[in-house]
Length: 213
Image (cartoon, rainbow, N blue to C red; front, side, top):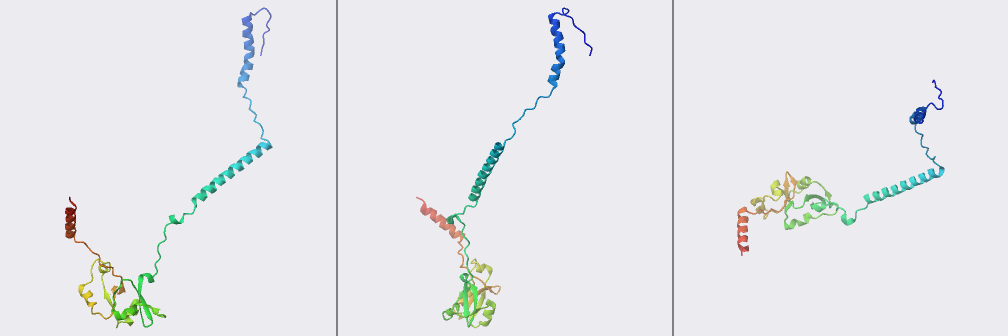
C-alpha cells in the first residue's frame, strides 16, 4: 500500500479528523467480523457430581415408593361383604329322587315320580350296599311294580296339564309311575295358572268401580 507523507500545517482540524477516521476504519471492520468469544463454563467438581448423584437416587427412591403405593391400592383385598357370591353348588342327590329295590338303585329327577302307592313308599329309600344302574336297566328288572308315563315337553314345563284319563288312572294304579320324555325320566313342574283375559278385564273393572268414591 502506498502512503503519502503529510506535513504539518497543510490540513485543518476537520481534515485531520477525516484522515484519522479513514485510518481506523479497517481495524473497526476487523473487530466487527471477529467471532464472539466463547463463554467459559465452570468445570464440574467432585462435590457437584456427588451431589447430583445423591439427588438422582433420592428422586428414584421417592418414585419407587409412589409406585409401590399405587400397586398396593390396585391389589387391595376386597372386603368379604363386597365380594361376589359364589354360585350355589348343588349335588346330584339334592335334585334327584332315589328308587331302590333288591340291591340295585337308580336316580330320577325330582318331580318325575307321579304316583307312589302306599305299600311301595319304601322303594323310594336308599338301601345299604345297593349299586346304581341306569333308569332303563332298572325299569326292565322291575316291570312288575314300576311303570313309565310319557309326557310332552309342554306338559313337563307346566304349560299344559296331563291328560285327564292319565291322572284318573293313578287312582287305581298299583305301581310306581315315573314321567318320561323320550324314554328318559323328566321333572313335571306344577301347572301354571293362566288367567283368562276376559276374567282379568272384569276383575279390573270391578276393582276400579269399588275404588271409586
